[in-house]
Amino acid sequence: MHRGRSLIVALALSAGLFMPAGTAQTQGHADRKVLDRIAPVYPELAKRMHVIGVVKLEVVIRANGNVKSAKALGGNPVLIGSATDAVRKWKFEAATEETTEVIQLTFEPH
Image 1 (cartoon, helix red, strand yellow):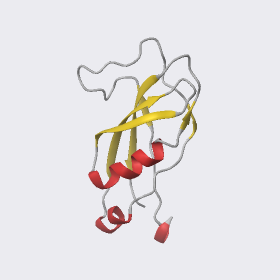
Image 2: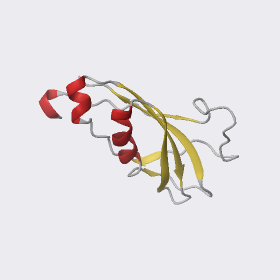
Image 3: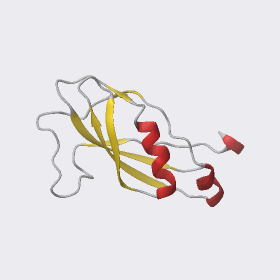
């Protein structure tokens, strides 16, 4: 990465751990395995400002494993765009129906 800094992306797929009250997931499914993960780009502004943090995204995954949509549930606005752009390119294992997952990405420069 730029100037020896690296990006650690910690992935936490949780079946409800970070779901806000009143939000339901698709019944009868386990967490979907990520087959192809694209690391988010650490934004230049975040580098200059030494911004670190966690971005939580609600991701709707089609039955074929492609991401249908990704919506930010929380995180630093400087990091959300990069996290969302990367996760939209991810490929998940196929399932019998569309599912919703909550993904957490951690940005830390080293």
